[in-house]
Image (cartoon, rainbow, N blue to C red; front, side):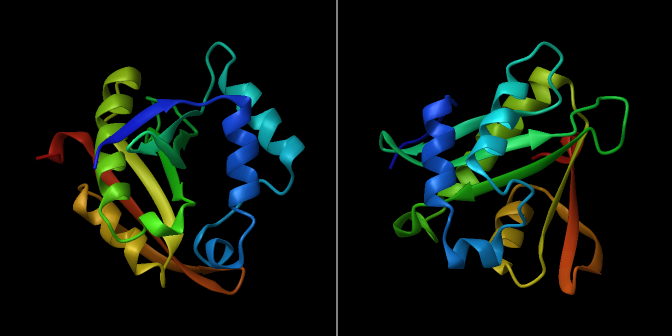
Length: 162
């Protein structure tokens, strides 16, 4: 199985938004975007000079299956960026695809933005996501309850990558 990261387009944003309107994905993916118009506006912002977010599409054997992105990019802050990802194609869950995509993406953004650290939030009961992050060098920094849901914050240090 070949995993590649490809450029995002407005068409990808539309597909992603539609495919992630799913109860099971909702239970695992914290969201900040609630409409397609908002998703398209956020995407347009990534194309501006000095954009603070950047994303790629995840392909498995030439099939679009999810997205990965970073936001709040600022090499002067700690962490230098925040990370999120989602494999919306459920038949691809549990196959190591997210781990491989994350590895490729971390290599790219660390170099592209001269990052030394990346943070990520996930729900505490999303064990699969925590494992994907930990396999790629993230470590749990804190647990907390937000909006009645237990969550965890993990952080990755580029120099610790092995």
